[in-house]
Image (cartoon, rainbow, N blue to C red; front, side):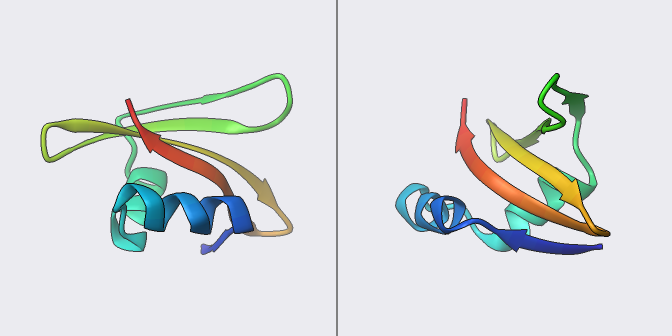
Length: 71
């Protein structure tokens, strides 16, 4: 599935030193995922001793990452 990044998410990738490969892994192979009441999905993946959390939506057969950060 194709993954796109919002302008905000692109900024956060750079700011927080998160690679697109790490983000893709967290989305496609998450340790935890839950859909919110706003149809957003919160996914978490443990990477390098930290937990990466990603907020995204699924629209028209693609994933759009809204934001991402380490907990």
